[in-house]
Image (cartoon, rainbow over all chains, first blue to last red; front, side, top):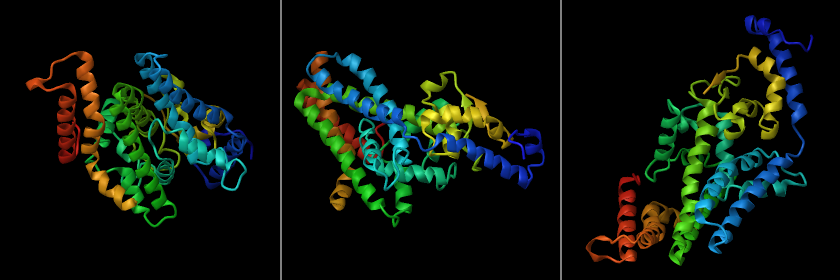
Length: 299
Length: 64
């Protein structure tokens, strides 16, 4: 069978042979983008953390005004999730590989500004992939909302202390799975440390610095991340099939400001393709994705 | 340790109100030069507001 895709035939009859050929072609393209060390993501993760850490001495030593550090910190928080996301999928190094320590290091430290415990993030994110848009089993399903601004408001509501946390629910369900108890413990400790550090800074006379470099940027960043990484790619979150549970979209903000999420569908099909290769893989795979009935939308 | 952390966790909003919000409000009052009600000093005002808001969040399950 030719490598050329006859989309009409594929969508019209969608015979087993056509489907098999589409999958073969899809996997051939995907393999081209899998396996190379995502250096840009590693530099992004560690560089972004160093930038955020540098804000503290610069501000405390009066070398950088707090009003300049505040927006930089917001950007740092927004940027900190995606390198960890690569580590959650072991895209820097798989278990047993020589750079596995680096994979875990990036996973653990890059999200310090967001205070997102790595192992909880990994476990719940894998659940998100397994059960995308499942109202009972997808830990990210709660990001669902009719409009973008409702998604932001719902995100704020979800962070309130009395609301059941979908990640906690998922962890409880997976209670007997290996590593879950350890992840929960690490999550508690990391959150407690965050509170202690904020309090120590505040009672030492650096309350405004703590608020504007960490506390407030964390809340703003969490809303931004939830909007573009959870809500936008899956909206309206009512389809569960492999090719339609995530949409390809164009955004007025452009792909950079939505952190590459216009091609998030590629990530759901092939999580081992690094974020920086999703756009190229999408361009090459697009005819196949169209033949498969993927969603292409504008927000 | 897990048991200790699980005991602390439900009291998180109150602890956060006292630990972080109280000194934050005190700093804001002091830096803006605002005069707190009933003759409270900035630290007293911060402590009262931080504790009250933290307790409200603990009881209501929401800061809002």
